[in-house]
Image (cartoon, rainbow, N blue to C red; front, side, top):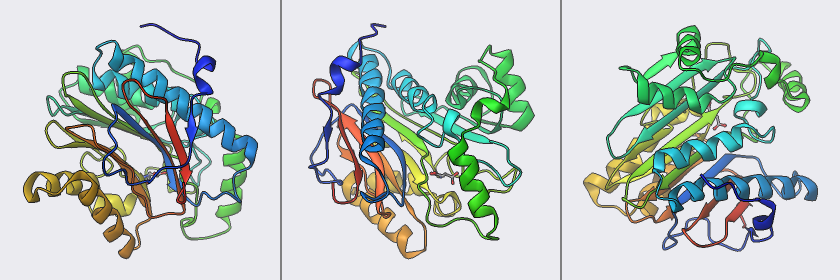
Length: 327
Ligand code: ASP
């Protein structure tokens, strides 16, 4: 793979000025860095710059795979690894804490061409949880591994192990302390999960998602991200979807597959299907959003929270990145 100096490209990143539903926009890669209570007032200019740069870098890295004729599955994995390595997002390095002050990560990846999927939950010592999901997809007869079994498998596969302290960030620890005094799950969070959906030159779709879950979650809690059809889904000819939001609602409403089913069985456009599912979710009390691509590469990024870190890139265009509802 050609590694290009990313800084040369960063000035090309466009922030804002687009309609978040993107009825007609086409792309080869779309990403999110989590939905939630993200507003102009809550994000400083310097943080806005960091989010924009990191999301732009991830888009350029992932798109390079597609440009070189690589698979959408590889593009999704590489894009997510980049976001996992950043402390800005709630995945990998920046994962939030459980009530017990541990970091337990979930991940999933799905190949729309073969229908194969890999998922992992309760990861505490593998640097890039998306690699565990990918290894399950590629090298296991199973779809979903959890806890110690998943980590043992990851180590057998040669994935990089880290001390759990690698996942410590002061901001997430402080946030845990704040919400611990409450007996309920925090409802107005900047969620920060990461996800990617890509379509390659052969028209193959893939989707992946990675998360630290929700601050103050009970240890052992598994969210929607690794539940295939809830937080992550891809099917060639239909769509690829990655979700972010309050996982329990996404599981109960099988959000990613519901969007796919509306496209497949009711002939809805991806724009209509995704927008309606996310708006119905809000009526049920579920906060969050999704990103997706259909089989023609049409982009959707609807959300029902004040903001969602998100962006997309076409084969030859500049990265487009946004975070607020009004962008
Ligand atoms: N969906 C994730 C979970 O519930 C959280 C998020 O999207 O930030 O684990």
